[in-house]
Every structure is written in structure tokens, then in C-alpha cells.
Length: 463
Image (cartoon, rainbow, N blue to C red; front, top):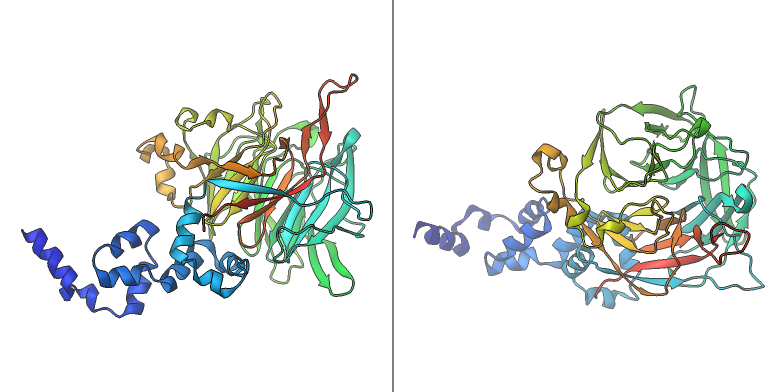
């Protein structure tokens, strides 16, 4: 009886929260996760109106997806009227529950156009509204030193016209990493066709010119006397507006590495400072894995090939705050995941998509069977404490964070050591190149070929 009286009193308006101004209630709601906001909306008509308002849910989307993604998503609608017909709460739910992707082939052979040659282990980035492709490996173990760019803007599904950019630097390489920090590209390491490992750091800036098209300028970054040992086939990602983290790779004499380094760029971007992260435990040595930043403090490491040449499926999270860095492993069991037996992989892509989730595509297993599947990993709302193995209630909880997506539309081939990047909205993924299955020739032990295909992957939202 007391409980009923309390509930009635709350709904009738005698609760202190009912006397708060609307903007104060909005501020409180913005501290809550989606489920809690929806539960709050069930308490009474007044709160239902407030907790389902378009103003509130656009703010929730900006909180969880970032302003850049929300603004890019708004610009992708044909007009304001179409946007108004789709409430932000509906958009949020659809992004949270996405279960399929649709693929589109973006470029057909045209004798009047030029295209990048097929390659693998290159870099592909979305920066300043452009796709930028650099380097990679080609037939016969040769390296490439060419740079290509194409302007995307808001026309994600149009046929694209590549432009070859004459830069002269960096030198040819494959297995390097290149990440976007604000409007800059930061490139590190790689391997050349002689097998030499690099440890140089380059800063690139893209410029758009109305008449001259796209230009890209590279400069060798001054990093002082301290830098990571030379390597290739490592993993890297941006972790703030001025920092990049790298891990692992193949060092001198073919030794796989297990170290973690962070570089911080100066405010004027004229130099950078590397320092090594020491954390116990930490991910074991590997190459061909992925590092992906999903929030301001969390970066996910997945997969790769270990010291014993085994293909891995472990997940680690690097938690970075000011003056503090720590690796934590996420434990789960493959048998608790539908089709999870296909998860171990190397040479895959792992990209942060809208909502702070990880989209994993392709790669190959220990038998070098290449893959064409798409997986989403969602640990965006798991705290660092819950990741600790002694505090896990069930490994099934983390297994539920894996979801295999249904592919629709164009069917790209199985591939590994391709590259992928996402546009500003976080909804459209661009994939280029890689190693793909080819026709088996009599003189070849395996049927392999390099691919030069560019295709688009769209997260399907049921709007």
C-alpha cells in the first residue's frame, strides 16, 4: 500500500522532480543511458512527452555519436522535411539495432579514366571529405609509392573519379599505418620490397582547390631521439585530437612485437613525442591485427597472427586517460556466439561506426581461407570494472555483444589485407583492395591475386 501511495504521489506531481524546470530535467536525462530514459518516459504523460521529445533525442545522439556524425547524418537526408518525418528517437533505436549492411560497387572499368593498380596492405583514409590511398604491396613482393585521392563530399553512392597525386614522399612501402588526426594524416612505419622495416613518422595535409582538384603535402615529422623500433604489419589508431597509438607488428629479423607506443603531436603540428606504454597484463605479440578507437578513452585491439603463427580472436581494450594507460582483456567464449567459430582472423578491417561500435570485415583464418563476412562488436557501454575477469558474471554477457550482419546488394569477394574507412556520418564504409581468391594457375601453389576494387558498405537503417 505504501508503495502504491508513493507511486501515485510521484505521478500526481508532488515529487520534487516534477517541480523542476524542463531544461533541468533534460540535463538530468542526458546523464542516463537509452534504456533508463525510456523507463523514465513510462512514469507519467508529462515525463513521456519530455523523455521522447525530438530536442532531447537529438542531444542524446550528439552525446553518444558526436557532433560530426550527427551533422553528417542530417546532411545525408534529401531535405529538412524528410528529416522531420524521422524522429531522433527512432534513428537512435535503429542505429542501436542495425542488423544488415548493403554493398554497392562504386567504380567500373572505363578506358577514359585512371584507377589505382590492385594492391594490399596499403592505407585508405577519409579526410577533409576525400578518400586518400597510399602505397601497398603488389605482385612479386614489390612496394608502391603512389598516392591517390577522390572527393566524396555528401555523394556517397556516386561513381567516383580518382586523381593521382604527385608527392614523391614517403618512399614506397606496405604494411604501414596511416590514421586521421583532425584534418591531418599521420603515417608510421612499413616494409619496402627489400624487406627493410621503417620507423619514420610522416604528417600529411589534404587541400581542395576549385580548379586544380586535390593536393596532398607530406612532411617528415621531427620526433627527436626516441621512436618505436622499425616495423610493419602493426596496428594503429587516433586516440585524441593530438595522439596516435601503435601496437605490435613485425620487426627486424621477422620477429613479432608486443609493445605499445603513443605519439603526441605538438599544438603547431611541427613535431611529435613518442613514449612507450607499460601495462601488465598486455596483449601478446602479433601482426595483422586491428586497433580501433571507440571513445575518447577506449581503444579496441582484435585478432591478428601470434608468435606461433596462430590466428587469434582475443579482444583487448586500452584505457587511456591523462597520465594513465592500462590494457584490459575481454573474455568470451566462441561457442556462445552464433557462427562464432569464424571469428579468429588476421588481415581484417575493424572500423568505428556510428554509435561507438566496431564493424569488422573480411580477413583470413589459420588455413588462409579468406572471409567476406561482416560483424559488429558493441562494448560501448561496458565499464572498465566490468571487463575485469574477476568481476564478470558470465562470459555469455560479452558474447552477446557480437552480432553478425546480413549482407545485401552487391556481393564483394572474400578478401584479406584490404583497407577500409568510414565517412563522417559513421554510416558509410569504403573498402579498397586486398588479397582475394583467384583462378588457380598450373604454376601457382595457391590461387591468389591482388584486388583493385572499391566498394561502399551502408549500414541499413529501417527508416
